Image (tube, rainbow, N blue to C red; front, side):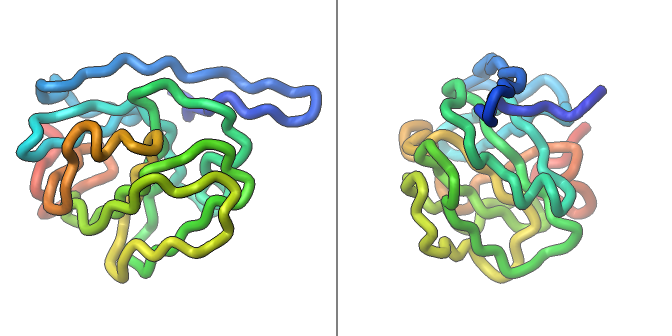
Length: 163
């Protein structure tokens, strides 16, 4: 299966759009490369995601994306836990940035990052994953620090392993 891509308007080129199918209030039936599940006191939610797991994909991120469906996002996967700082250069939509440790537990949520803002957004020192979703979604769902993510990239001694 190929990697998913968002609709990006590049001069004379329109890439394919990912359609989201929300699954809120219940755990995902299984792990899938193109989905991230989040659970916490609010219940659970599932986001259809594109995965950015190499330098080029992480550098591109969601730049130039003009819209995402409600339950879409991007999961950034780093090779090892590291200091994570993001910005919104060339990003056209507001985003919530959810910074996650190696164990799959949310360490920090930066809500409503503003489009085109180049101010660095610091997420933490031991971050292995960053989930970006539409701005305001984390608050709307009730996501909090300490909630857990599940995805096939989150392995080892993790809070919520894939089964």
